[in-house]
Image (cartoon, rainbow, N blue to C red; front, side, top):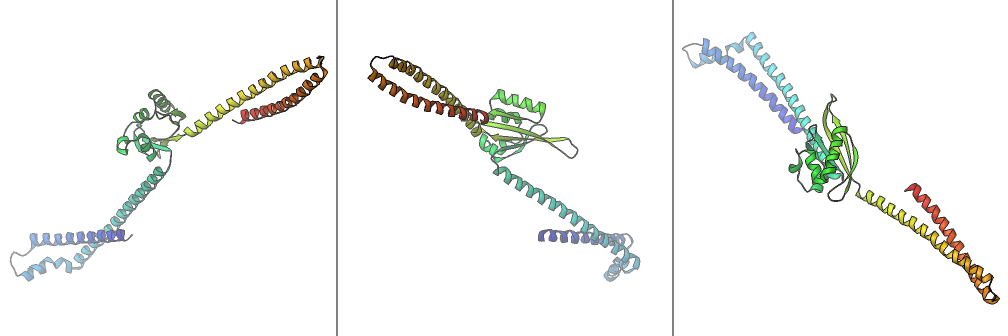
Length: 287
């Protein structure tokens, strides 16, 4: 604020000095065009400043100085407003850059001609390229550096057609990215640029894959579980039947007793299989 006030005073003083120079130039012009050819220095000075001693001349000079003063005040205010606007814009850029340096997602702003204007630091980290190497480049050049050529061109073709997209793509580093775009418009509704947001969803994809594999293994184990129970129950029924028809009653009783114990184990396995079926149905519904 102090610097702005000093600048304001300088502009006002300079404007008043310009007014004084204008008045002095008028006096000199009058002197050289209508001044005395001869005479003492005193007479020359008196003739030079004579217009300032009259009411008309004094009024004219005061008006000139007042106009210059008002002009200086208005000019100083205009300069202050411009400086304030530049300060606000600079502060906005600083805040924007702080945010762009902080967010983990890749944020890209490109012009209506699809040239990169600015981007978050995550883009430079991911590509290994500097800001000077990316700014001003076409988004297609960047796409082919990050993603396989064919999917990148397909994604760009979709973007050209729809302008606003939400797609997933796998990068050359085997990372999965969700790409979201939006259109920026000016006050007149004309397209001024585009914003691309790339979110790393690699962990989410891996989690989904792990869930899928785990569910498939669980389903296979449940099916195998049921097969094992049947493989035990069917021979056991045969053994039980043979024991009942055996002539060795003592041995038959022992066999039947063992078969009953095995049947109890099978019943528990059946209960476990039923519980596993419920878990499978629950996971199938919610995964």
